[in-house]
Length: 255
Image (cartoon, rainbow, N blue to C red; front, side):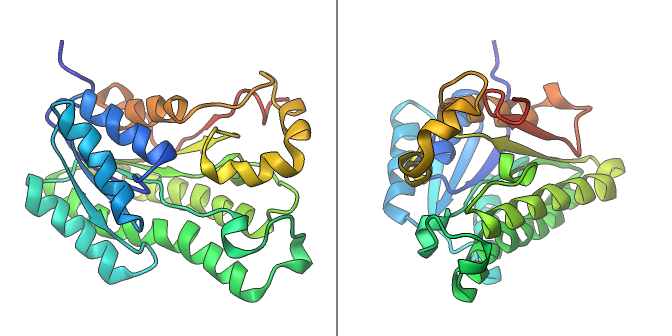
């Protein structure tokens, strides 16, 4: 039986590890040709090696998602390599500890840390969408999934700039979905809860017990949990789904 993404071309940013890597590998398993982009070029290459060794087809590239030139080149290279762009997963992002804001309350964030968080986690998604939408409209449609977060749905302490960025991603997703719904383009977001990745280690070390108490299932999710949702959203099985923001969080938001 053909995979969910058989014959499609997909672009994944933040594909060097964690959720991005798991999604890239699953996309390839489901029949897609995959372009893997990340600022971590070595990690992106490792993801591609995993795919190619398993019989898939993938390429890697280095990209700084806050650079319009880099992002435009990322999309162009994908189309040059595979002829089209059917699916995009805008997943690249950073956490507070990566801008020296670990545990910082709203008034304690530096301007530099706030700006970098917004630039990567919000502007980077918009830059990618802008380039992807242009290509997809010319070819008659496509599917975009953005990585938001439960932080795009609720407030989280000591995460103000992250929360602001992810709320912005949810808003971008809804608006673009409405704008292009009649042109064959679907736009959705996935809202992970606390997932077992490098990005959550800092938060879990500081307040892991509280986080697990607030999660109905009482355990963290895995990158595969998110990959499965993204794969479905990019597939034709989700043909009537757009403008949605799916929390995959073990019941965190519901609890």
